[in-house]
Length: 454
Image (cartoon, rainbow, N blue to C red; front, side, top):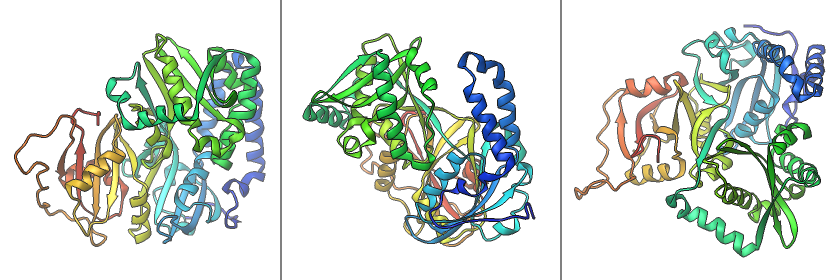
């Protein structure tokens, strides 16, 4: 299938958005986007329906990229076909898969409904296809187009925190570090303090952490949240080192914007971000708020932000409108390495499941499953699917041997201890069968003791 006559080559390490940015259509889109952002916020509601429809129409024809390099953990050669709707998600996926070393080729645009009917000629050697898709466009891709990995998941923390959460070693470690470093906080609604936070903390931190994929909200957008809330600043020896904006909506509090002074990594390593979270929660526990919105997190289970939030009792509740529709088209060692090194959350009928891949040479032991549960369980995940690769590229249907009893002495399972069960081929195919041509020997489900609560 030919979708474009022109090709643009991007050398190793060059940001992916460098190639097609000069087209008149893209310049017009960026001008319209800048114009929309220049409209005062009270008037944006009038222009929003037009802007939203324009974005939806534009995303019907995503850019097509062929990205090749070494899978960054295994260093095995891998090629991915990426249908990219946004620069942010495109750069994120490229970094997730390949790190900083890659070769990217832009080959044009394609209508979404043609994306999975057959790969473009230039993408015939790719092992994985990922489409950055708006939620409203999923039906256009077809029922078997791929599994749905949310681009972002959202979650909440109940307030006040339960004694079980407060007693967690991870929370106690944060509180000990706060005492050891002599950290304090103050709450302010001073406008000059807000400007200091935005210019010297928030913007440098985002750019330092996310680089080219950073999405920096305007001062006006963040100030709108500040006007409906307050700023919590963390200080050490009288110097402000980090902060967070907190906004209120009834009994729900949100703190979507964080920052660290000058984006300095030594402050992050010293616990500035952890202290911001802890101080915000301590402050909210003195208010009438009953839930804290912990914002968005990437839906890959090794994501540091997602794992960090878990310690506070973070529960995944829903996802954003952006999805990564993912399909394997070639079962290679590099494909398996990517899946093994990047466990993820899959969304199915509004429910969320963790998916972890293991080499199939040795069956997972109860101890292995316990470790997986410890690392990757999250409140809000219905189950964690532990998938063992088959020795070859075929999916076996034989009934596996029973899982060894976790309590061979006959004792009952302790409260809160998850249970494990083999899924039949029909059961796991109904959840992740759209992943495509990957050999799976068997799937074990880690089931929380209480539904959705690890």
